[in-house]
Every structure is written in structure tokens, then in C-alpha cells.
Image (cartoon, rainbow, N blue to C red; front, side, top):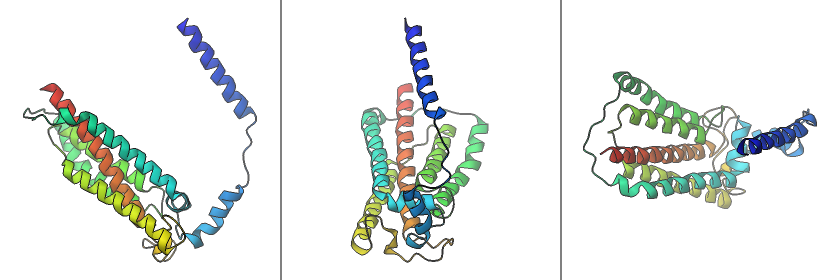
Amino acid sequence: MRNSFLIILIAAFAWFMYDIFSEYQTQEQLNKTAAYYNSNEPSEAGAANVVTAIVVTYRGLDTLGEVTVLFLATLIIGFILKNKAEKIIDSKYKTSEILETGAKVLVPGSLILGVYIFINGHLTPGGGFQGGAVIGSAIVLLLLADPNKIVSHKLMNFIESTSGFFYVVIGILGLIIAGGFLDNRIFPLGKLGSLISAGAIPLIYSFIGLKVGAEISGIVNNINETELTDKL
């Protein structure tokens, strides 16, 4: 009975997808909204990466919602794991020497790469979320190499809360000084394609990158502490 239901479900999904793709036609021209962004973004936002300008400025409120969802997920996970993480961890768990050596080589470079990605998000593909994810991955590797290492909760909370606060401050300044929430024209747009350009976008993405990196690191650290206490 169960297998029959799965077969029917897969067949229905296949029919649904076939119906969509059989009538699919490739758009040879940008729609009205996309054409506006593509034509006017360099003069309005001054970012070489059009996608970045759309994410950070034109749809900045959506980005604020995404960051808020990640913050709530971090908060809930930390609350659930809090009691277990409060236990004293005095046992030592060793991993392979290869993993420890790899972490020593890769973690510093990964942290630098994460910062590079969100600082240059207005120039090249990447940005705050991608750079934050790279930083979080570096912390994952660090804890895999040394599960006994405890990342400072106070430091992660400080970075996360401070970044989020200034992100909202920049958004409000956009409302007051420029044309809307997270309007990057609170600072001069500069020369298109240069590092110091696109107004406040590099600063906005830096705050997003730090916030996302701290939140992912906090989640991983909470899970790591809980795993250690479960083994005691």
C-alpha cells in the first residue's frame, strides 16, 4: 500500500513537471522590472554587481526579513540546547592529526576569504550571506579538528547583536537622508567598479556577513557543546 502511494505521488509530480516544461519558453528579453534595474542601477546604486544592488537596496526589507529568520533560528536552537551546554566539560576528545593540521592551515585562510567575499560583494558574485557562510564553515572545521574548543558565546552574541543593530541603523538613515530604507546613497556612490563605491552597500554587506557568520558559528558551537555533554 505504501509503495503504491509513493508510485502515484511520483507519477503525479512527473506529470506536473512535464506540463510545466513542455510549455516553457526561454525569455529572449528582460521583463520591465529587470530591464529597469539593469539600465538604471549603475547610476542609482553605483554597484558593479547588479544582483547585490537589488538584494541590498531595492529589496532591502526582504533581506532584513531573511536575516531576522536566521536570528530567530539561532535563538531557538540556543534556548533548546542551553541546559545541556551549561554542564562542565572536562573530558578530552582527540581527532586525527591530519584533520588538526588541515584546520590550522585552512581556518585562517577561510576566515580571510569570508571577509573578502562580503567586502567585495558589490563588485563580484558573493556578499554577506555567502561570506558569512564561509566564516561559519571555518568554525565548523575548527570544532571538527578540536571538539574541546569552546567558541566564546559572549563574543558571538556581541558580534551578532552589534552587526544587526548597525544594519538597522543604516536602514533608518536611508529613510531619513536618502530615498528609502537601506538606500545606499547615504554615502557618495564613488567610481563604478572601485572598492570604495556603491555608497553604503559594502558597509551593509559587511554587517550582514559578520551577523550571519556569528549566527552560524553560534549554532554550531551550541550543537558541539551538547554533543560533548552527552558523551560524559
